[in-house]
Amino acid sequence: MTQPARPVYGLRRALVLGGPAALAALTAAGLPTGAAALPPRRLVFPRDHGAHPELRTEWWYITGHAESGGRRFGFQVTFFRSRVDGTQALKSRLAARQLLFAHAAITDLAGQRLWHDQRIAREGPGGARAATQDTDLLVDGWSLRRDPASGHYHARIRGDALAMDLRFEPTQALLLQGREGLSRKGPQPEQASYYYSLPQLAARGELGFQSERFAVTGKAWLDHEWSEALLHPDAVGWDWIGMNYHDGSALTAFRLRRRDGSTLWSGGSFRTRNSRGVQTFIAGPGEVEFSPQRFWTSPLSRARYPVEWIVRTPADFYTVRALLDAQEMDSRASTGALYWEGLSELVDSNGQPVGLGYLEMTGYAAPLRL
Image (cartoon, rainbow, N blue to C red; front, side, top):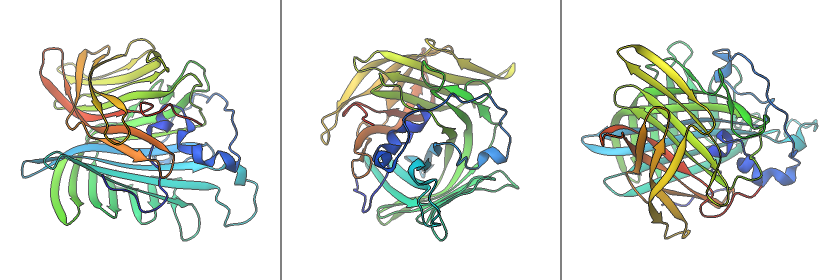
């Protein structure tokens, strides 16, 4: 695993599950500790593909799997925006009112290795940007943009040890998570976010690490979420999956976890494509269960991660199995956290492999501290 060469940022699901772990390093800058419940609203596009600087946290997250001549890879590209409340009243045009972060990783299954790199910059003239009218993100030379004419996304990453130049073509309609895009992330109403997904993206382009380059094709998943919410005080971490089925269906499932391992909150969605057409189901609290089956201990952190799960959803009982155990992410140079995130397979209750996607687990090396 490569080590970043500059201050970096690592946790992307801190935002999806309602917590400012992504902002832990910014507490001293004057971030408030309270948040109001988000009102229901109709998401409007393309405007809501863009940034929402009036809310505290936001992320655009793409994961996927790809092949090149039979060689298999997983990949992840994430851009974050964080509002620094302590600087909002400053008049200087150089004040860091918004900080932008970017994170990229490649799982090389043949080489049994995870490559990753990260960036951080403040938004402003000549620096980072997060446009408000559509997806147009730039952090220290890394970019993610959406073409308004075609709806395609383009990610360009040039890191110290990895490179990506990938294009993503939507093949399905937007999937509004939660209640028409307002997704609860905890037992209190303020723990919520605006959230939509684009599953089953057709991916093509180039992946590289060290001196190797690979022309790849595959499938990807995009999540975009923004919120004022805080992580519930009883939560020490979370478990989350986002899976593209081989038949075109899509599954999301997550839970927030207490210190004793019990579930504080859970949810998810399932979009099925069958002879009756396309149907979408939103899971309610208690309808998703995670049961660990096999563990891997990190030689770096000594954290013990469940790398195989039984996940019960309203759709089916599934086995979620890591395709490489050693996919722990080290973000101690920024947020101080270690967590696990990587390419995994989805197996149905009949034992048939039905999909591929990403699994993330946080709070195993240590509880998240804000």
